[in-house]
Image (tube, rainbow, N blue to C red; front, top):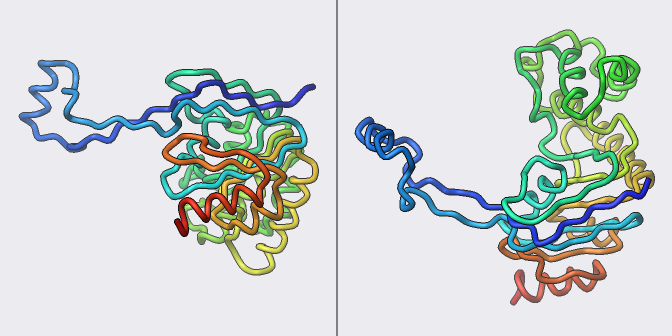
Length: 249
């Protein structure tokens, strides 16, 4: 299978509502008018005419200031956001390491959430049963798996989410800030797991404010500004460009 990520003239648009909690009178007016008035919100582009081709062997770092569109690009590749215009084509199994545990149900147990998250990642219950023991072992939460996750500490929550997300080899690995939750022992374990996934994956896309990580792990980098790809090339050159242009202009 030829793994690839291909974005062509992609726009992703968001709205900021100026009055997210309208009064009763405003609700009645809006219900009569049916549509919100244009001046009730401001639109902006999270991605603005992005064309990007990522091929097997690419370890792509995404660099930019807060709000540049880095996480939006990752979520668009993952299929979480759909473009308002343009085309996104992805071939290969995606493992997204971002917002870990976002799909957890706090009322359900850790074990139930293993199967719930597995379903969200596209695995059948039978496949998850095969992976359940490995997840329990890696997370080191065996005795807590039948406890509702609402009673978990943030470290336990993160350990379970990370163990589920990294349970299988990825064709395309998406990382939004490298995992660093929990005690030193588990952080070291998770770092080793990530390095293994990096070696095994055909395509890796990394968002990180740690420019040393981008330099170390990537063979290509892009610079984003307000949803636009403004530069693309060697990681060292892109980091120098980013520092000169945005950090120390």
